[in-house]
Image (cartoon, helix red, strand yellow):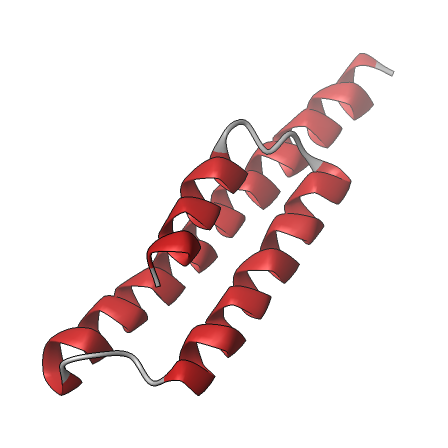
Length: 79
């Protein structure tokens, strides 16, 4: 039973970490696009926001967001 709880905790941590990587990768893509083009196309901003929200939804289903949502959505507000 204790081992099962530890495995669940580990999986929740891994989901959170993968969510962080995914959302930061989206942000890096936006920043690179902005650097190369001068700005991110509006269509990409909308799609990236939806991807970030989906990633946050998955994280919140299995793990605590732990401030990740505030950080990720802060980037979206700047767009």
